[in-house]
Image (cartoon, rainbow, N blue to C red):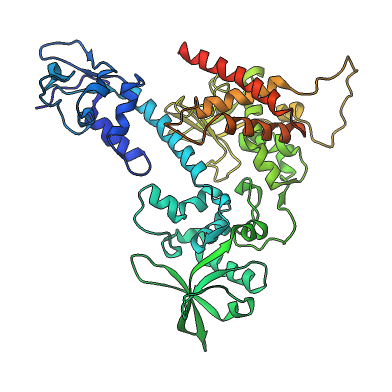
Amino acid sequence: MSDPIPEGYISLTEAWESYVRECLGKTDPEHLVEPFANAELHAFIRFPQSDQNYRLPPSSWREQFFSDRAFLADTIARTEDDPWSKFSGRTPFVSETEFQRWLVEHCRRERKALERQFDPFAEAWWTLPMAVKWIAKRTPDAVRETWDAFRQRIGGDLKASIVLMDPDEGPLGAAQELLSRAASGAIQIIARRAIDDDIVTIPANEIPYLSLTFDGPPAFAARFEKGANGGSGTVVYRDMRVPSSDLKRVWPRLANPSLTKESPNAPAQEGTPHSHQQSPEVSSGAYMFLGQAVEWIICRGQPADSSHVAARLEAAERELFGFLDTENVTVEGYPINGRARVYESLPAGIWANMNRRYDSGLMFSSIDDTEEREDGGTVHVGDLQWNGVRLATSVVLKRWPPADAPTEQPKSIGRRPRYDWEAFDKVALAKLDEEGAFDPSVDTQWNKATFERYMATWCQNNWGNEPGESTIRSRLSEIEAAYLEGRKGQ
């Protein structure tokens, strides 16, 4: 019989159930042993007739025989010589707040590790569902969801199929657009020819005579059939693949879906980089949503290549949040509480840590469901949420004037520093806050070399060049040391 659990705590079996629900892929109770053994989490028990919590020593988790069973049984099993022998029959528990905070951070880091491991842009050939998803959504996350290797890694049972996609995303229309572009010779499709099982390139002049059909459940695998008098004939092609380079060239990546209102299936002009320009109304209205402000910081009223916007989004967010924090700007939004949209000022002091750590409870997203736009503003502060988050346009334009606005040339006082190291340090520290300390047991892809490449790319994007490799490495070593020292005091 299990013991009563004190208020604010959950049993380890409940913690395990939460872990299974929230984590991607296959789960094993042994995965939960490590955070308790490393004192990231703390487990307790209570003896009968006592109101005191007794902690299970962190070192005992590795000494105890089959300590992972604590997550599967209501009480600690009876043993004789093991470290937990005196706790047998008791129900172990953990602080619910502490566990949920750890779980959110763990899942976030696990997700980011999987995103690095399964980078669709590193794949030369995409399956037909991956290609269709790209045309419809234009984001790597959407493509990853239809990548069979990724689906298998996170425990999915079925391969991706166009039939099983959300009809509102227009997968069949995207598939027809793909065939149309292939028929024009703009892209290449290879497939396994049914008659001899050879892998061949489907001739462009044959594409108009093919129809897209599907196997029955549960797989719904796609195939191309040669039509005869408008009907379907012999199956001729299966296992279609499309070069990812062709897809990205014909349907360029969108930095933000809100930047263009065209149909996701509209053909792009080949050889022309996808660009966008914010509406002039953005800078003429009384307010800007935060999402609009982020885009304004990048573009300043000028057309910009989508790849440039994508590379600058995170830095522009950080720039905006830093400004809101230091200048004490009034930012307002309306709370989500079922009442009318009544604007109120958001709490001060939230911007310095906005979007830095997912377990901080401070989150911003430009996706605003209430405003039905993706350059809006949604802010979470713990359990509170505001939509339509905005600030005065005049404040934005004063800090980030239009690119074609005349500027006052300051008097030259000495030589300008070649590199803005203060900005470099802030971005590097923000990246460490986001990813955490280097720990190969958690993420083999997050290491010093990755950190150095990330900051070298940042330098190139923001300064137009980059310092020497040894300079960046030395600077980041100091930042890492300061970061680790700061964590000791937490």
